[in-house]
Amino acid sequence: MRWRKLLDWAVTIGVALVFVLVFEAEVAKPYRIPSSSMEPTLHCAKPGAWCEGRFNDRVIANRLAYRFESPKRGQIVVFHAPTDACGIGGTFVKRLIGLPGDTVSEAHGDVSINGKPLHEPYVDPLLRDNESGTWHVPAGHYFFMGDDREHSCDSRVWGSVPRSSLVGPVLLTYWPPTSWF
Image 1: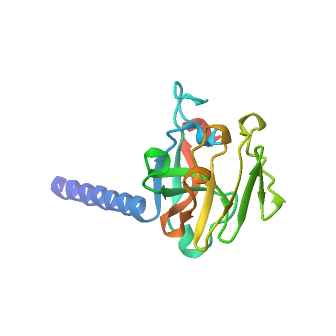
Image 2: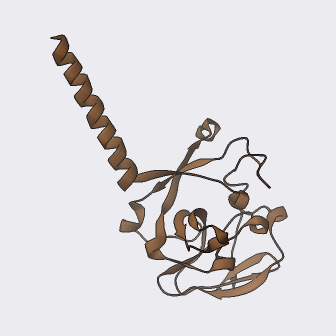
């Protein structure tokens, strides 16, 4: 009887572990916010340069979303940046600004899409930069910017990102626990 109970527990734990591993690999994967580029929306930890939080926020990306729907302007997205992006490449978390075919313009910190001003309530006016430029987003590519424009290395520097590099939109912030309320 005791042996059977141990076997039941072992099978239950094994199935749960497999479920969690498959879920993380195929559906939702956690990521950490390592830099200030998304402040004040997502925090990185002090004493990092320009970081506001005590902890690095951690988010979960929905890896299935873009199999069923197209990315939307304004979403915070996890993606694989070009290998030379910011001298480090890797996985980035930024806000989707430009869609395929768009012309993105920035003049003294204000962003326009196809000549129309973009309403960006998520950007703190104190974190806007004084940069100016114009970028065309090719078909099948997306243009990303951090919410902390002054301290963000983003598509303005290394260009647009192909759709195949998008992991998925941020589903939720799960760490620190204060983000639950």
